[in-house]
Length: 349
Image (tube, rainbow, N blue to C red):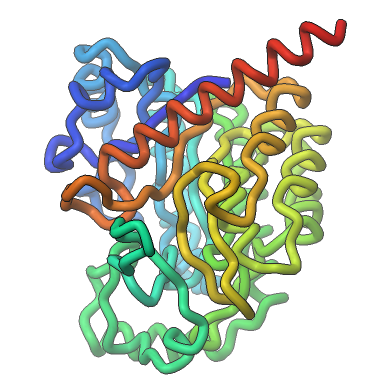
C-alpha cells in the first residue's frame, strides 16, 4: 500500500512540510480547487500543482476530486458539454502522469454531518451524524463544508425542485451515460477512475443516492468492464449504514480488481443510522481496522490509502475533519497494522 494524505493546497493550514514529516508518508491527495465545476483544468495548472508537491519530496498519488457537474447528474440537455470538459481534464491529468481520480455522483451535496465539532468523552472534537437532527434540517438554508457553495438561495431551491423528477433509477441512467462517455478517454490517458460511495450511504433530504453498498458497487462495475472503472473503497462511509459489512465489501471489490483508492477511517455506530467519527483505532469505533488492512495486503492492493477524517485534538483548529494531528496518528497506526499483517503472513509461510 502507498500511504497518502489529503492536502487542500497552499491555503491549507496543514502544510506539505508538515505532511512530509509523518513516518512512511509518500503520496499527496489533492486537486485544483479554484476552477469552477464544469470547466476543464489547464495542463499548466496541473503541472504547477505537481511541481509544488514534488518540491517537498512527495508526489501526487490521487486527484480528489474532479467534481461532476449537476447537469450530468440530472441528465440535462447540456450535459455533453460538461462531459467534454471532464474528458479534457482527464487527458491533461494523464499528460501530467496523475494515475487516479476520485470523484462522486451525489446530488448537490457531498458528505453530510449534523455537527462538525461534537465533543467526545476524551475532550476531542469530531464530526457526527445524528439522524434525528438531520431530519429536522432544511437543506435549502444550510451551508456545510463539502457542499458546493456556489449556489445562491434561488439556485438551490431550483435544484432541489429539479431533483424531484430524478429517482434512483434515473440517477443510475445518468451515471451510466457519464461512465460510458468518459471511460475510453480515461483508459487512453492512463487515469484510473475511483467513484466514492455516498456519505452517508442512503437518501437524505429526499434526494436519491445510489452508491450505497456492495450490491450497488457490483452494479456499478458492470457499467463498464475495465479496471479503470473502479472505486474508492471508503470503509467509513459504507460502515455508516449498519446494514453494510464494510470489510466484506472491500474484499469483494479487491477480488474483482476494482479498488483504485482506499479511505481508511473508523466510525462508531450509536443507534439507528446515527454515528460518530472516532479515532482510527479499532476499539474506538465499529470497524475492525486490522481486518481492513489485512484485506488490502492479502488482496494485493498496491494503490494509495489515506487516513480519512480525523478528530481535532491537542487544541488544534482548522478545516473540520482535516486537521494534522489525528490524521497523522491514523497514518502511523495504519502503517503499523500493515507491518504487523505482512510479518504475520511471512511467519506462516
